[in-house]
Structure formats: structure tokens, C-alpha cells
Amino acid sequence: MLATMVLLNMVWVASALPDAEKVAWGSAVAARGQQAHGYLPVPGEGDAVPSIPVTVIHGTKPGPVVALMAGIHGAEYVPILTLQRLAERLSPETVRGTVVIVHIANVPAFQRRTVYYGPLDWKNLNRVFPGSATGSPTERIAHVLTQEVFKRVDAVVDVHCGDANEALAPYVAYIANAKDPSVTERSRAMAMAFGAPTVKPLWPDFSQPTRYTSATAVALGVPAIGVEWGGEARASLEERSRVETGLLRVLRQLEVIPGGAPPPVKSRFVSWSESVMSPVHGVFSPAVRPGQRIEAGARLGEIRDAFGRTLAVPAAPFTGVVLFGATTPPVNPGEPLVSLGQMADTPPRTAPVQPPRPPPVVLNHLYVVLPAESFEALRALEFLSQEFAQVDGGLPRFEAPVPTAQSLYVRGQDTYLELLGPDNAFGEPVGKVGVGLGVEQKGSLSRLVGPLRLALGGKVHQERTQRQFEGRGQVPWYDVLYHAGTARDATLALWVSEYVPEFFRALDPDRPWRADDVSRRAFLGPRFKPERLLRNVEQVSLELSPQRAATFVRELVALGYQQAAPPGEVFVLEGGGMRWQVREAARPRGLLEVAFSLNRVKTGPRVYALGKGAKLEFSQNTPEARWVLADSE
Image 1 (spheres, helix red, strand yellow):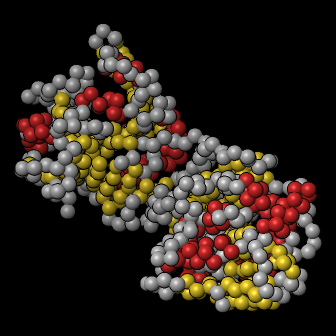
Image 2 (image 1 turned 180 degrees about the horizontal axis):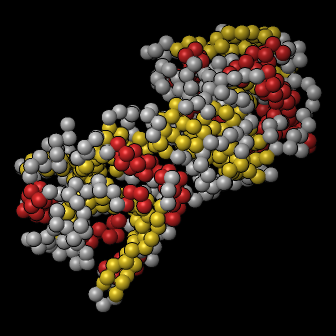
Image 3 (image 1 turned 120 degrees about the vertical axis):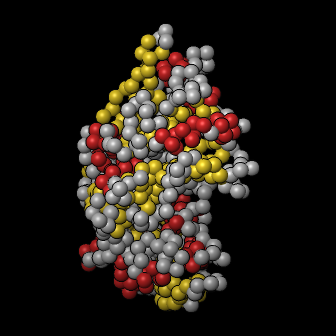
């Protein structure tokens, strides 16, 4: 290790930028052997952005130019206070080269005490690099840091801690896949020199915008590390002292200050990490703490709505150690709740492979039991089968429905509607709605059992259904998951299924089937008629009792759907190409509306009456339609 560090330090000497007798970062101008304070302006039109406070320590001897940064997130106080102290401690007489200290990179966020985001445009500074000179305020800050700091230095140390709402286990991160391997090795050496208990290699996709500070520096050929230590809007003396000690170790390793290479510290490496994001707006109660080892499927906490009803119970996607977690109640969709890491004793040399995940869940079909008047109006509507879609009587032959049929199947490309009359063969009551979801990866249904059980707090049944085929007897049809507590609900049933390939082969024995094909399109493909209007169901609006609405939302969230609008009278969830809108009512009306995507814009008559309070209406200029079952206002 010592030999490696010596070699790397020799590289620093060779690659150091030419030393000037006088250097300037904004208004901070320092001659050799001087320290200067000043500000980096953030130019641009629109909202005025405060200048960035910097300190320049220009050593008496030539050497590398190193940037130490704090305040990328304005409510991370450990690095801000640590760099204030370090600026006092570093003397130009003992510094070799130049140290540029960026005290508060995100001044607007610091002044307004905002978490994650800048208050002028509500963007995360560490997600918009390399920024834009003509962009929003946060993007302009990123542009200034890229041009005036990253492009002018030999090394970057970006110091963070948990934001005001986060606690974390300390670690140091470096970019492990720089285009130039020497940049990776120098970054890793800096990370090891810091002396953190955990080191986290990162593998960004350099074909995309860099987004992050360290990735931006590395993309420019500048070694960089990110430090994470402390959090929760606190800055204890112990935390600040430990970060200061680590920074001094890095400066010694780079030969910016005397003392020789620091002694090695035994660290563990994060071989894979992932943050579990909140799927909803709500109030979070964590159930784990930083540094804790937890098993795959373990409960990470609970998210409730403003009324105290459970919306989500997030689970650990794999076995690992908690790196950081949210500790304050407010959470929003897409914000991290808990970050987990898998640990190793040696640094990974190749990008890790993501552990298996629960499969995407999509809408297969929707059924509704209509009152006699509405069902008879639909059954008599020639437009439905002649122009709108294929309409049939169902399995196994998909023949046209007989005049007295109590079931109509309206087929799209990936989804279909099952319309039932009051005298249907299934004995379902008028107003009952069924939501049939599905997975499209063979053998993946079982990975949803854990999340559903955790979210619903009860037993989730998994079983296989069968279908009778003439000449073949009972054939496996689909595997299904459902919650016993809601399966017989008089208002709404929800289940998740996975087709069995043997069923497809029995359905169309002459068709060449793939052995692993369980998709909706495989089932509906031969019956889809693109010359007609219907493509797919894309939005469903429901009105349910408060208790059933809360359970339905919890089911959808456990299956991967995310809240797509702020809390209000309508709870909106999206995922898998679907949008769900759920209302609550003491006397719920059930299904209110179904929205369709179409293969083309409908011409001619655009509204069809379908019995009392129901209509099928088409958009004037876009390939969309709505089936409104009742007045939903």
C-alpha cells in the first residue's frame, strides 16, 4: 500500500497545474504564501443567486490544487462547520500547492434551511451537474462549480452528511469506472486515506449527464471523493473533529501538507447499494437504524396518511446494512427512505449485478357488474363490436356473444374489459368491480408475496387455477395471489396473476409458443383488431368506502404503483402504463369512469348514451375515449 501511495503522489507532482504567483477564485485573490476570502459570483438572468463563499490558501511551495467543498445540500451542517475550522487551521507556510475551500456551495438552500432542494427552483444541486449557464438557479450554481472549480483543480473532496432529515453510518465514496483507470486509482487512494469505516465505490453511467459532483470531476479527468459523516441537522464536536482528521489525512496523502502518507485504516466496501424510495406522500415512522444489518423482506418502517391510516410498509429488497435513513416524518414520492448496502472485505473491480427485484405489475383486465338497463344498452350497441373493439363471449372459442349473454369481453392490445349483467354466471352483485393485475416474467409472481403480506398485515394466498378443455381435461390456467380479507368484498376484488404457458398451448395448439411466454399480449394478440378503435385501458376512477379505499391503495402501493398527485379528495396512483383515481364516500358508487387509448382519433358521432347516467365519449383531437358510468362530479 505504501509503495502504491508513493507512486500516486509522484503522479500528482507530474500532473499539477502550473503554479502562479497569484491565484484568484472570484474575489478571493491570494499571492503565494497568502490566504484570501471572497466570493464566486453566479451570473445569469432571472432569479438572483447569492455568490458562493470561498477561501483560497496559496502555499509557499508549488504543488497540486485541491478543492474541498461543503454545502452542496444546504442543511448538511457538519461539512460547513468543519471547513470553517479547517480554513483557520491550514497555514500557507505549510501548504504545498493551493487549497480552495468552497464553504457553502448552495447558499439559497442554506439560507432557507431546505432539505435536498434549492428553494428558488426546487431542484437538487447534486442531480443537475454539469449545470447550465442559462438554466435555473440551481443549474447555474452547478455550472459555476464545474467551470470555476472542477476544471481548475487536481483533486476534489466533496464533503456531505445526512441531510436534516437523515441519519447515516459514515462512509466515503469514489467513482470506480472512470474512463482513465489512473483517475479511478487516485480517487480510490484518496478514499482509503480518509480513514472511514466504510468505502463505497460508485459506477455512474457516463453516457448520461453526470448529475453528481464526483462524477462530474472524474469525467473531466479529476480524481474525486465524496464524504458522508453525520446528519439530522446536527454537528457535534466529535463528528466535526473526525471529518477534519479525515480531510487532513487526504491532504497528507496528496502531499499538500507535511506528515507523510497516513497509516492505513481497515475499511469494508459496499459491493452493491440501493435506496428504497417513498412511493407516496405521508408520515414515515422508521423501523431500522444506520449500521443495522437486516434481512431481505424485513420491514423498514411504515408510511401513514395525515389521518393515521397506513399507506405503505416498505420492505428491504435484499439482505444488507443500513447506510442511511430518513428520521423525520414528512416523506414524498421519489425521496429516499432507507439506503441499504451489501458489504465485502475487498473493493469490487467490476460493476455489481443488481439483485432480483419484484416484477413490474400491469393491468390484465377489469370487470364490472352493471345494472340491467346499462348492460342491455351496451349489449345492443352495434358500434361496440363493429367499430370499437372485438367483443366476444369469452373462452375457449372467443365467439360472438349470443343475444341473451350476460358477459361481454371487450378486447384491446394488452388489456380487456369484462362487462357482466346482473344475472351473470359468477353470481357477482351489481356494482361489484374486479381488478385483475398480472406479471409478465415467468416464475416471478412468488416475489410479490412478501411485499403484499407485509403491507396487508395478513395472509396472502397463492394458488393455481385450472380450465377445462375439451379432449384435454383440466389444464393449468394461471397462478394467482389474493388477500383473504378482500377476496369476497362486495364492492371490489383485486388479485395478481401469472399465466401458465401450458394454458396458451391448449388455447391455440397450432401456434408456436415460447416456453416462457406468460404475457398479456401473447393471450390477446390473435384477438386484437388494430383496425378498430380500442387500444387499451389506461385510467380507472373508483369511488369506494373509506376502509376499502385505504386497503386498495395499500395493495397497489405494495405492488409497485406510486402516488402521482398531492394528497386530496382523489388519491392518484400510476404505474405499469395505468393511472388509478380513488375517491372515498360513505355510500360509494364503485366504478365511475374508464379511460381508453385508441388506435386513431374517432370521427363522426362522439358521444353514445349507454343507459341511465352512462355514456361513451371520444376526444375531438386525440386518440382517447372515456366510458363514464355515472355522474362523477
